[in-house]
Image (cartoon, rainbow, N blue to C red; front, side):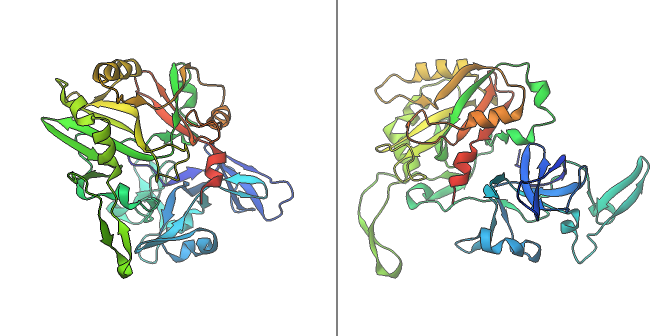
Length: 380
């Protein structure tokens, strides 16, 4: 499911900020957002833009230019990230519903329906129903901010991400306030969320494939280090594609190719040149967080993943799971305790703040993530 980066949400609470006359906190689900004082009252609907949103260059967002403008190649916009104002962590942006209105027919009004009055944007069949939870990401032209990809990670594209494999993007715990209580009776395990690059490897009907988060990458063949001439005549060494390099170093094709069924493994690619290498690793590796049976279209449970890796790791280059923090975990009374738990040191390097945690029940029917605010506040 695509992430709702922009959606209609309800203001749950309005809270003061000590020493602040012009701003206050508004609560949307479990998100705290600093907003202009008096702009909202409890119970109001608003348009909420999550952190990691990349907003288009439009007049309604120009007030963000000084703090949030980014240009990546030919693409420009405004990136929303976690910030601190008057000592208060603020995550995302809340704007009045009027931001949805355009100069054409896209205006907010009441539509008479058999079930009663309906608040909607636009006329007739093209209308967007204004209700809590409505996704307006595409309508507002919002995309997910993706940092520039280093050359050694980019590679040559073979095609889009394969349709026979599910993409992963766990929901953030702050968006699960309504479901949270019903989730608490289950048993979960907790893993460290690593700060790297998402990688997927698959073997299907005799074909081996390598994918980044959104694309399948072509096999670059045998790597031959040479000097190439880039822009403005500058010489540099060519870079081996890291996704394929790790596949070869860990014999992933050979491991998956021995199985009777078709599988994909999904993990976090980490090491030198990736996200600043926060774990101070030599070389590169991938830590596995999901194993997917392509034939049955099912994820393996934690126990089955452990058994799977035991069977395929028959050499001195084993595939390993992401660090497991808790094997049996019960959800606490409230979401704020999970957000506190997201903060801590990495199990891969005790001097590094971890990005956060991922919590899944053992059969993986439920999964979500909590990102450390300490980590988010350090992002540029």
